[in-house]
Image (cartoon, rainbow, N blue to C red; front, side, top):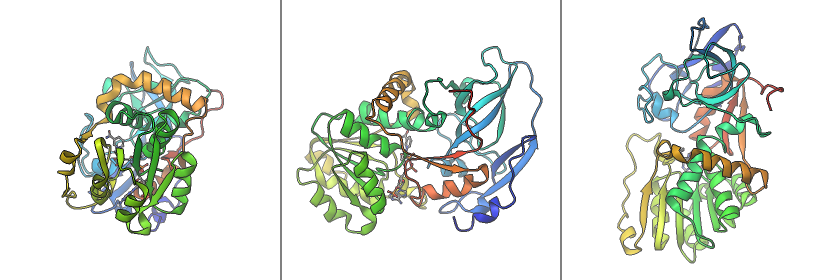
Length: 357
Ligand SMILES: NC(=O)c1ccc[n+]([C@@H]2O[C@H](COP(=O)([O-])OP(=O)(O)OC[C@H]3O[C@@H](n4cnc5c(N)ncnc54)[C@H](OP(=O)(O)O)[C@@H]3O)[C@@H](O)[C@H]2O)c1
């Protein structure tokens, strides 16, 4: 992306040191190259009870700009200027002096934006062993990770879709949205209408199971929603907030549910969008309910088992956008807020070990 090229020029992955991306400045609007600082430091010696993790993949998520702004959500320490960015990743245990973790195992958890991590594998880091189940390890950041749990918990714990209901999904080709559309259409038997930016994304949404799509970048979202929702909607899975949420609220059927997953259209604004028509809920006996994925961790095993089954039986086709190279993390993050990604955006820092699966 424009402006980010200089950040990556001359970068080489160095296996003898830990390289990490740090917060150089609080973002103003979308993240920019000067907001990031690349540092390197020696890899610390392992002490008893610690492991050395070698990063394979890192996740990119819209919440990361909030981290850079000093906010924290799931018990992470708020970031100070100079700190390594928070972020989940997939890593292989390169060395272990920990009784519960063995060399060669592949794990997912809170790695931070760095190429190695020395960790005591504390509960706060939420590391989990990746099952060697024949599926690619990268899915541990998408369908078989927090993104998958977000889609599953938002749709089933909060949205409770029923067969033949009309479901509207915004951000429908993003990491969460691309899973929600498939689960709603192919697992729950709903009619799904998707909102995405651009004809290529709309075509992808239809491939994933949408019966029709709205390209909000073509303009006239309001009339396009009226055309696409002649019967109104039973469930709106909201990934974007702002005027899209506003427009969707004009189409609530009786007992409709709105799942507040995210509001990415507002993340780079100075002030949040103020919803003018929340009283529409009253007229339709409708509900609007948020959720936070970390409050649904008790459902991890069930959700992951179901998602893996649906991947195997073909109902769920994970969509990943993999950027190669740790040097491109800042540009890949900036791209989320301008809709550059299709599916779960992640970064491949090193190749998956061939002897693992
Ligand atoms: N509640 C929770 O616990 C939880 C958990 C995970 C994620 N989330 C939230 O859920 C949402 C989706 O997450 P994700 O991981 O799927 O994100 P993602 O992969 O980055 O996808 C988000 C999509 O939003 C669209 N978008 C970006 N800027 C937009 C704008 N200004 N207006 C309208 N659409 C815009 C983009 O698609 P287009 O090109 O189509 O615009 C993008 O592909 C985010 O808001 C995230 O913060 C919440």
